[in-house]
Image 1 (spheres, helix red, strand yellow):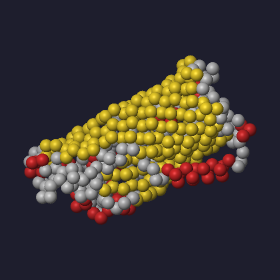
Image 2: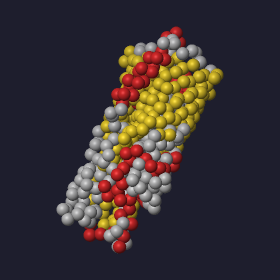
Image 3: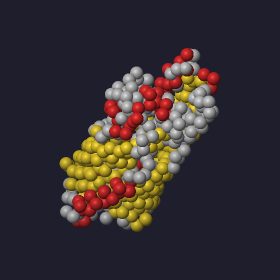
Image 4: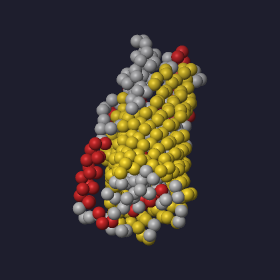
Length: 451
C-alpha cells in the first residue's frame, strides 16, 4: 500500500489536465465563494483562530503544515499545493460554542449577575482549488474564515443600582451585550518544486472583516470618542498580508514550515472610540513548523507547533487596566497574550476506500485573570481540543470527509474592573470577582472532486 500522503484518498494527479484557461476560472470561483461566506458567522478556539483549517486537518487536531492532502494550502502552508494534485474542496462546519459569565461578591450585590450567551450555532464554510500547471508549478486558491468572536448576553441580568431593578446587562448597558466579529481571507496560492519532493509556496492574503458590538453604554464616558463605542451596527474593513511556506520530503519524513505576516487592516471607524489606535484591528502574524512520519505503509503520524502573535495588535493585546481613554493609541484592549499551540494527529488507511483520523490540540490561554471583565465579550479561554475524522472515497474522482471536535469547559476568574470605579472602590473588593467560561464542539463535512 502506498503512503497515506500519496493515497487515492489524498490526491489524484494528472499533469495532462492542466491548462492556461484554469486561472480565470479560479478567480471566478474564488469570488463566488467569498461572496457566499460573507453573511456567515465564524468563531474560533486558539484565541480567536480556529483549531485548524480544512476538514481533514480538523480531524487530526488541526495538523497541516507537513501534509498535502487537500487544497487548503493557502490557509496552512502554501508549499503543500505542489503535492496536492488537481482538486476542488468544498466544506462546511457547524460550530457550537457555549459561553457564560458571572460576577459575585459586589457591594450589596448591586452588579452581581450570571448570564449565558445565546448565538450558539454557527456555520463556517471553506473552499479550496488546486491545479498543476507544469510538473514543477502548481496554483490554486483557498477561501476560508480566519476566525472570529461572537457573544450575545441578555438584558435583565443586573440592576447596577438602577431603581427600576434588574433591567441592564452584565456590563451595566441598556441593550443586549455582545460582539459579532468575523474575518474572511481569500488566498491565491502558487507553489514550485525547487527539487523533487521539495517545494516553496506563497499566498497573498486578501482579507475582509466585519464587526459590531452592543451593550457597552456604561463605557461611553471612558472613551476618546463616546459616540463610537457601541450599538452602531456593522462596520467593515479590508487589508492585505502574505503567507510563505516550505515543504520537503526526506524518505518517510516530511518537514514543513509556514509564516504569515501581520495583515494590516483598515480601521473600524464606527468603533474608533472602543478599539485602541482609533479603531485599529489588524490580524496578527503567526508561524508554524510541522513534521509528518510514515510509520507504516498504512499509518502516518504528524505534529505541528504554532505561535499566534496577538501582541502585534494593540486593540487585542493592550491591558484592560490602561489609564488611557478607550480608542487612544494606548487605550484598553482585551489583554490577550501570544498563543502557543501544539497539534498532534494520526491518520490510518483502514481500508482502500477509508482513512480514519484522530488528533489533539493544546493551546495556551490568551486571557489573564486581570482582564476578565473585557473578555466577557470574548471568552477565548479554550485550551484542549479532541478530534476524530475520516475520509471515504466515493468514487475514483470524489471523496467525502467528516471531522468532529470536542473542547471541554475552561474558565478564568479574576477581580472585576468595577473594583476601580466609584462607588465600588470605596470598599475593598466592592466590585466583586468575575468568571468567564466556554466549552464547544464542532462537526464538519467536506466534499472533494479530483480531476
